[in-house]
Length: 202
Ligand code: HEM
Image (tube, rainbow, N blue to C red; front, side, top):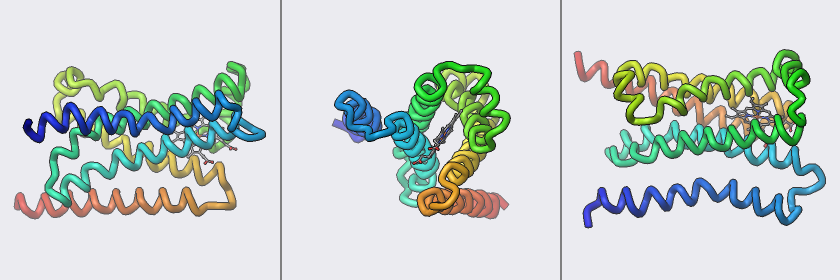
């Protein structure tokens, strides 16, 4: 069996199961009443953390593929990006359904008045076109250059995601600080790689 076979039929399904684990564990904890005194807040923390982690993991795939000359890694990028969107949707659903009970005027007020909600909402809105255009047919329809340009937005989403987290924690900035540091390294890598590619072309 070829490496491609293993990629498609073993690694990808395995990765899918691993990515689903945080949601399964969350579901299990909710079912067994193990989410602590404030389950809604706990769900918000867990889904928020995994949204940002998957966003950063997705952004790490290309640099790893470049550094280790392993283009096959890019085959996992779309799935990881969509898992980020999946966890963001759970995060948002928890807020809209369990936290706010579909109180749309209150949600609107929150988005306008609370900066950390505004920033989180902006990140969510920007992630929508990225998730929609992850379908092969749409990549074809848009053309690769335009698609790539649109998907640069993922960095804006990540910056907004880190800001959102920083705003939530206020004082204990260690964890969002680590995510922010990782994001800066990833952005610097991209700039370095672009420059080195441009120099090769000259
Ligand atoms: C409409 C969009 C969003 C809403 C309404 C929202 C709302 C919230 C709320 C209410 C909290 C908990 C605040 C607290 O504990 O006091 C939170 C935390 C968090 N959110 Fe969001 N969020 C949104 C989008 C996002 C996005 C797009 C990301 C990541 C890409 C994200 C990542 C996080 C993280 C990392 C936390 C902190 C988790 C922790 O404390 O461990 N959120 N969000």
